[in-house]
Length: 70
Image (cartoon, rainbow, N blue to C red; front, top):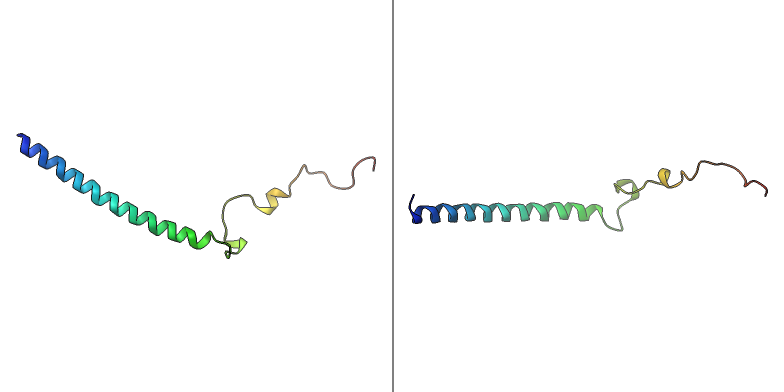
């Protein structure tokens, strides 16, 4: 394999990676736009995912009733 063939193959690989990179950047922008639709102040809590749910926050230590000695 001569030097020109090696350079040509590497340049083709670089061009392919650049195209793939641009494609992935576009896909990231699409996904960020979708995420932004669900990550704003006007999204109802029923549509928000992740984080702690109210049920998990209210669990406490499991004791019910008045404090002892009160």
